[in-house]
Length: 418
Ligand code: ASP
Ligand code: MG
View 1: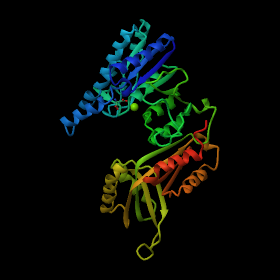
View 2: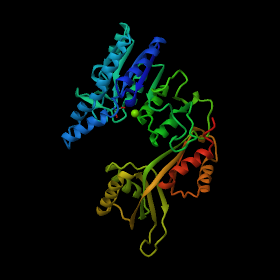
View 3: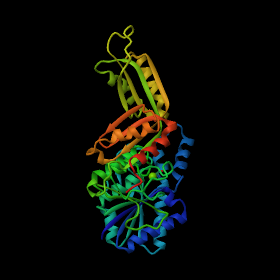
């Protein structure tokens, strides 16, 4: 029988009524002839509560016990979902991660999949079971202990099961009805996309569109799993939501598909560093060791100060999340104290935001950057840093212009039109 994976996020299983509503969606697919693997999150708020309990008990907690506690939220939902399906007359059974077993690495709190053997679940399907309900976000490590995958990990569980079981599709039910050209709360004209390419979704996901965990999109791209994002609160059918798929499956391809933003960025500049081989490594190695998530990097000519700097000098600018600025500052200052790098001044601008346009069409079209910069110029928005990739152009701007920039770019690329 054809097989579907259906994943329900926290708000979609927030209480018994919501679980019942989700179960009816599963029942409908079973009636249409599918075997279904349901992946469930914890009821909304539950994981935060569990994490709080762990932190309230032990400041430097043992990650194995963190996983033991935090994985329990999904176990509850899995059992309840199986029970509700049985109430509806659908033969269903629940699985915790270790029962499948979902084998993962031993990185507790951030484990990765190693293998998902099919035999237990396939055997039950063979005996007439129609729905396997699997607890998301968890697995079992090589030491036999429970592991978790990192926050938002149930999306990744769903994609991994879709790949392992050759599912026809992986439907991600959530509290929005799809992926939009930009955040509808910022741009009223934001439009729901029918389809979006894996690469584009990856950029949008990592740029702050929080619909899907980034890793789930990476995995879907690697195994070519067709992913669909749709609402669990609306009536849905085959055509609902947004399909995340291979670019070859997309007919309509606009040059720019979406505008993403990330509000809380900071820009850090080391003024007048020596321009010599190895200087970038000397700056960014300590930052990496300190766990700073460096994003954009720009090296620019420094205003030459011949008296104090007879040799070549440069300014080094990078961006990182605003809540990592203290860590970044410390890493750079420590490196300076240890004599690894020298600079005149460390300038931090923690009032910036990043706005990006994303689209696979950029590979084959010119003029996207010019159009973007013109749109920002027309609004008198100053660009502080620019970075580009094959399918993305990002700029750093003053945070207070972020909404305006998103709207202006949405208009400039006419994203409201299909
Ligand atoms: N319950 C977990 C979390 O809140 C995993 C998930 O829902 O995807 O992060
Ligand atoms: Mg989620």
